[in-house]
Length: 82
Length: 132
Image 1 (cartoon, rainbow over the protein chains, first blue to last red):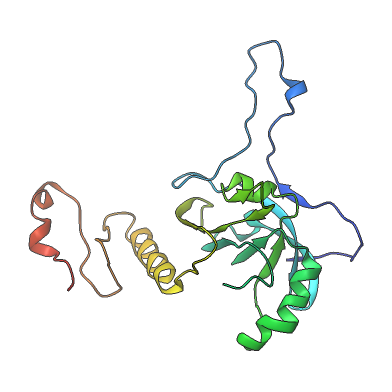
Image 2 (image 1 turned 135 degrees about the vertical axis):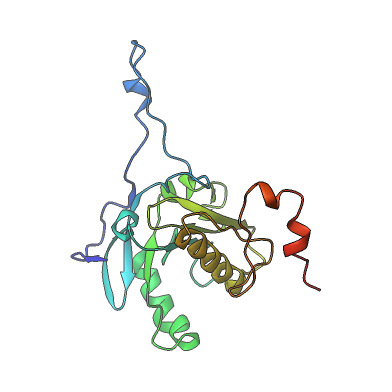
């Protein structure tokens, strides 16, 4: 985690490699970039997210963990029951 | 380990302080990430647009950044961390052998592994039997 100054509103982060906007779809046969999608056996879509860790706020980036085994775990929400 | 939900990092802090630290000594040691736009969950196929949340999904990423295993569950049932740890150990073993050994169903550390080759075809039953 890289520590960041705390602000009321800050960019949410998200995927590092985003899909090209539709308006940019060229008339030529240039390849339109698709948003990455998670599949087993394929590279994990890289992302940056605001985070909390050990009393501090910062940003966490998946590709910073290269060389390590990583568990990426999604859950419905804080304070939910299961 | 990175956890992600659509809550803010501020919510994560209070959840950790008021509840999780009472179940886990010292609180949560990993980065609790915020995916407020759902963009990350969407890429991982776990974002529920109607509810605005990410459903339960966990992904094992190897040291090259490749997803080797995933499990996605609807919300009312919790996960089993022991099965995840079993998978991590199995994939680590595969990697340590450069893929020369593979792990049969329900493999646990110490169990026999399989070495794919012409002699193994049709003979898996000799080296592996289902546990009762």
